[in-house]
Length: 275
Image 1 (tube, rainbow, N blue to C red):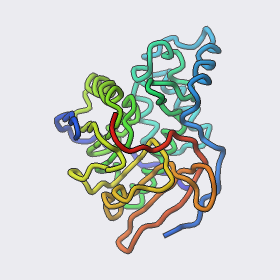
Image 2: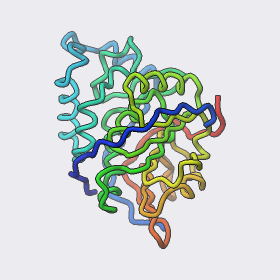
Image 3: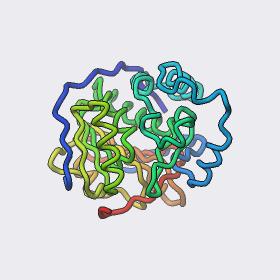
Image 4: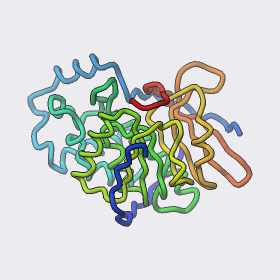
C-alpha cells in the first residue's frame, strides 16, 4: 500500500456554521488488526497503569512529536498527516480524567458509549484518503465529509488538510461537545451538522473525500451518490464474503466504482437516526 509524501496546504477560511439538522478490486495485504474503539473498561485499566513520567507538558509540541515518531515507526508515511497531528492538541479533546493518556496510542472514552480513536487508526485512515488525493494530483483532501464527529479531534485534523469540512454527528451531546472544542480552536472553514450520518449531507455534495467513524454491513448508497468523480471514500465495513470489519476504500472513476479492502479494524456499529 503506497503512501503520500505531499505537503499540506492551509485551507482558506470560511465562517463556522453550526447546523441543528443540518467494482470489486483486489484486497490489499492485511496488516495487524487496528482497534480504534475498545471496551470502556479497557480504557479505564490503561488510565490506571499510567506512569509518573507521563502527562508532563501535555500542551507542548514535544509530546505531539513523540506521538508522530511512534506513528512513523509503525509504518505511516503521510507527511501532511504528521504535520497536522504535530499541531493539533489531542489532550484538549479528551475528558480531564484521562488527559494523561492523550498522546498514547490508545482509544479513550468520550461518553455516550463512544470513544476517540487511537492515533494510529486516525492517521492510517487519513493517509488512505491522501493516497486518493495524490492520484488526482491534489495537494489537499478538497471538500471532505466526515461521518461521526465524536469529540472533534479527527475533524480538527481534517480542517488542516482539506479545503472545506462538513462533519455529521447523530448524538446531540457529542455534537455540542465537538462544537465547543472546535470553536475554541477557531476552525472557521468547518461546518458541523447534527443529523443522521447515514444520509450523508447532500447540500454540500459532491465530496472529494469521505471518511466514516462507524462500520456497517454495507456502505449507504447516499454516501456513494455524494462522492465526486475522482473522489475517495474510506470507511470500516464488513469484509467481502467474510466476518469482521476491514477498512474499505471506494474510488469513484468516470466509468464506475472501485473497491479495495485493507486492514482489519473494529469500530462501533453504524446506526441511523439522531439521539
